[in-house]
Length: 546
Image 1 (cartoon, helix red, strand yellow):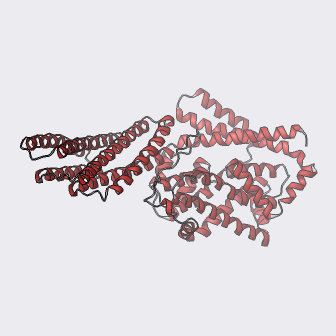
Image 2 (tube, one colour; image 1 turned 120 degrees about the vertical axis):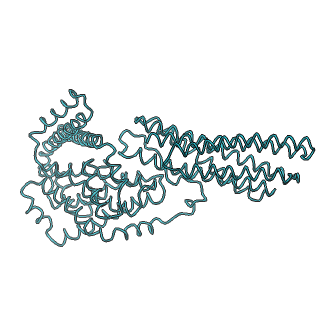
Image 3 (tube, one colour; image 1 turned 180 degrees about the vertical axis):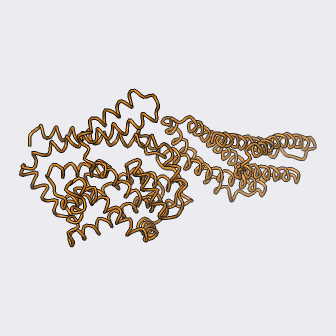
């Protein structure tokens, strides 16, 4: 095997992979966020789920991208594990469209197709037309690369070491392993199937041997989703397990069938003489048949995934972790829908953080009223959790702000950043009130009945403001106006309580330590109102933009 063959193979492979990536990117850009919206509105109907998964994958030509989206949606809580089962099944069907396109034998027209696409990109100013041009250019380059690989591999038919290697693929285990490893390396079953078609077209591998490699390729494509699930919550990881189970079960079934019955002969009979068409049809048959067989057992697959990956103690609620967010993917080829996934996850994490701050404010006032610091440890642990969420959410936001190009999303991300900071400050003021409780208990400080009544009123006002923020209504103007009125009311009450406090001091009804603590508490009360109002303003801006 000389250097010309190696260079031809590498050059053809480079063009093939680049063409596929270019075509996929063009399809994703043309589709926009519509694919994401379809997934968001998915119902629990299994057949609709399979159809949606198939259509989306057929459009973006990547089952890995669709599965990664499903992993992200499950992680953010926008999709249940059971819904993801149907999406994954559909994705495996949709990915077969690439093999069918390659089987169309339009290699002679490939340069013209590429030229048309490049002309549309270079000479047209309309972005949508440029996206379509990107699709055509990618398709043309893909076929040119495939032809180069096919031509380079023709001499290999008479090269004994290569013939010996291909012969080994008649062993199902070797063929499946080869397909699995190669697809895992390039992270695209569509691309690896296309390369397998190029191999077969050059005459170096038979359909029977190619079938086992094809089955392994379906398992290898799961690696992308597995990598995407790193750092996600438990259900997202279970989504990748379902993806693996689907393809492993299908591989076992079809391997047994191929060993017992002449399935490849039947496929060759109804596919005609084109080996690329035969491989494409085998790929389609594998995924459609496996989906049909497993649709009745989709819920059982979800249950099995839960048993394989049960809940771990450290991932339960009382341990610090991001429940709805995962590490932000800053790569240029992040899948479509990722912005929506991160936004939804971020919104849910911030809601968790706000609820923790509400509980801490409530408990801190209660502890102060009771003069008992027993519950303070709980408040301090929750405050540590709030600080953790603030740090992790802020880190994710900073990454998203760098890479986000959509103006509306960029502004929303900025608003979420502001909200997170304000919630963290609310938590700090709750801890301040707890610190006062420690002093009250240690020094046996007593407040007058009037002072205790005012502290109770502070607690109730704060609780009302939290409730108003968390129970958002559709009437933004009325809702924001009510929060603003509450914030003004906090300012008025702060001034009122302060004046009454001065009068008590003049009457000698308040000792020095109690005076200082009450004054500091008024400051915290007023600041909590300010921060809740800041949170409400940013929520209002987000709702207005959306």
